[in-house]
Length: 88
Image (cartoon, rainbow, N blue to C red; front, side, top):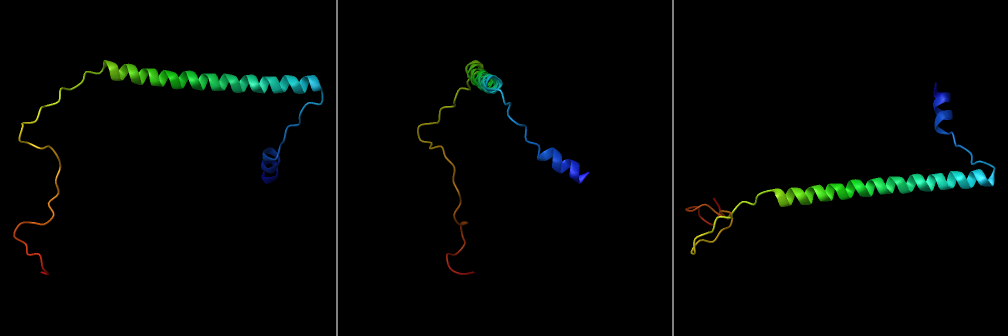
């Protein structure tokens, strides 16, 4: 079993000897590469178009306006009130 696996993974197909066949295989490989790139571009552009349409169609939520004297933000309590600054 080990011998067959080694033989399977070490297989290297040879290039055709005929120059015309070599050219045909090369052109076929380039055509396959171009098709794969084109399909990838179409899929990527479709995803971008879908995201743009979805963003445009989604209703926007109205932002609540803050009062004049209120500053919005987050805070962190550095020390609790009533605790001494020294050692415990």
